[in-house]
Length: 359
Image (cartoon, rainbow, N blue to C red):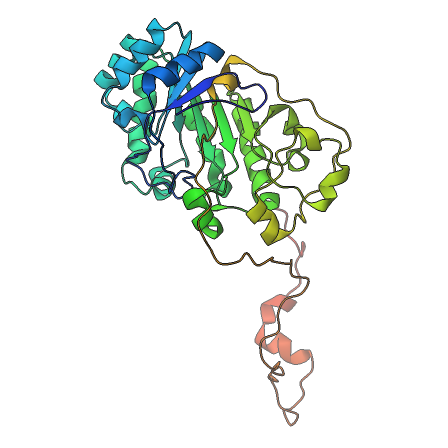
């Protein structure tokens, strides 16, 4: 299914090849999506009529056995740049990646969700996916294919995002995108497991992005409300509008701000959101930001229990009746003076030239 990116600065078309995947990511926004009948030839021609660039997406597009032929077909149709958005499992095979490059592939969009296998594989629910991802980066760079990487910001990884930039910078990755999860499909069903409190998670994300910039790795934040990105507003990638709190009505940046998911707003009532002092210009478009094609088509949210708003605690709870402290000495215990302490710790009372020796 072909679609044109709707966010500002995104001029690349996307063409979905399937909905099957060999990962089972906890934040997947496509679980439950049903693909309508489609014609690849017609959709490719439609995409070419509006764009000179296209990215093949899924599901997992590398599970399409005819991917190399479809890349070659896109090249023959005149597309100037042709990308693939993939989890990297098949592209870990250098020979396979080389075949895609020879067919006309120009760039690769991968996803890395932690700085080690424990974190990344937890999110993909496929053991070995971290090693495959690193091998895919290596295979792509061997073929001189530019690589960008997206990390979905979750409750489980936001504290350890700082481990990711060194991995990417030392492997020649062209840019890093940290993306706030969109609550659709499986991510909606598992929202309490997936979605972090943004006021808590975004400072970690911005600190990690600052670390990426220090390593000369371009970094961007995607899908975050602009009031929470601080000085990184110039690196905020525009995305589709979602929901806004009442306080957002007076914000000068609202027209450029993606807001937050409605389910997130219902739970936390937007207490983190504040109007910005001035409107913002969107992040400038570039070859790197054009390679980022976002999350694509999303599944409808599954039926779930009503969202209950969580109000911040202002005091710790008191559980049960408070017990009085236990006296260390009874009222009948003999009282002793400070002289008794000298008997117990005589060395404390020995005179010294320097009571507090210098280190």
